[in-house]
Amino acid sequence: KVDVIFASFYLDFNIVRTGCGHKENESECQTDCDKEEIVRLEMQDDLGWPVMSFYEGMIAGDVNCSLLIYRYKSSGDGVFIVSMLDEEKELSVYKGRRYTLRGSHDEVIWECRADDRKTTIYFLCGKEGSSRIYWITDEKDTVPVYKLERVFERDVF
Image (cartoon, one colour):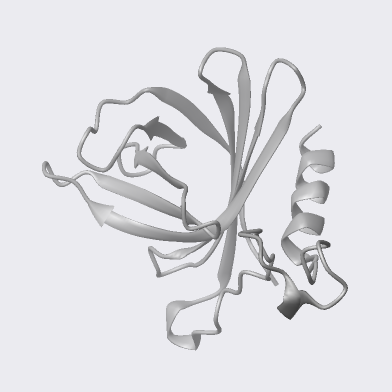
């Protein structure tokens, strides 16, 4: 199961779709559609190897949530893809940038800003060395709502 999910995330992460499909000439489109682009993790030698982390858990009852993060070993920022599969088997996928914040009580919080510029998702990190993160409603409300467990983390070569 993890290999299949990982493969689909890898493909989603590396595919570029150009244009919106509303007009043959993209510049003529007058709608507020999303024009998809690649989210790049810029090369930074001084931050170590790129690392890939994959988390999975249930949120909001019956919604399966998967989070894939690419970052450099010594960096708190990176890129992400999050997918949510609801009980009707409807899949929602967001991608964008991940930033590391500090909470009011020195908690580590990940702010995942989606490319749609409308969606921001927050995760509270577990204690140092923990394989758990928690979906939270915003960066100020650090009460853990839903738990995601790290399935794997590995260097990307």
